[in-house]
Length: 113
Length: 140
Image (cartoon, rainbow over all chains, first blue to last red):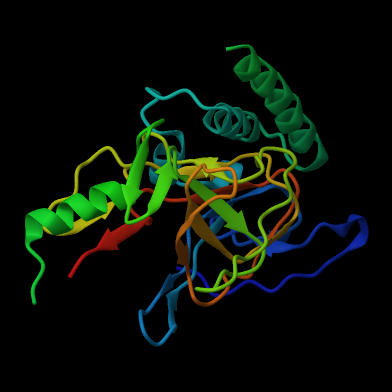
């Protein structure tokens, strides 16, 4: 797994994080996968949870987040759209705008149900 | 005195419950389903609840429903979540930990963790996930 990230706040208030897939540091959108595991009793951290760009996210992580598709949820729909858009090369502000648009539509649809 | 395993399994099925609605009673307290997972910016303690993510973007006030996420009954006195708990289009902030509560108006607190802050920096629009199997319990 990965070592603890440090952050470098830059203009716009977005923090730089290292992607555990491509190992690049940037402020692009990412997937934070998991709780850190902590040794019971001592509180000692055994490993850190990984962070990935959407397009760098490994298949098994994607499968876990998206599930088998049998349960509809706004979160899964938005995340699936984020993976698809990132795989086509969308990053940064454009990916954020896309995610926000998909989220608004999915939330509105869920409210109608 | 040892706890019978069938009883321990029943306790876990009640405590880590994936039902969408209904109630269950422990002692004098009534718990309302679904259970929820609060994503927190500060850690909870046994006596004080940590602060949760700002209710904006894809994070709903009070947390993400755990309905359908404990679909396998407890066995061998242990039980774990069977699906990921995800916040998409997350608000910016620090992810410190989580807490499981019920859906009562003033939620009943149930479990929380970890004991050391995750200290993960989340940018607006990120995806934040608790992987399947990481919400777990063991009765001994």
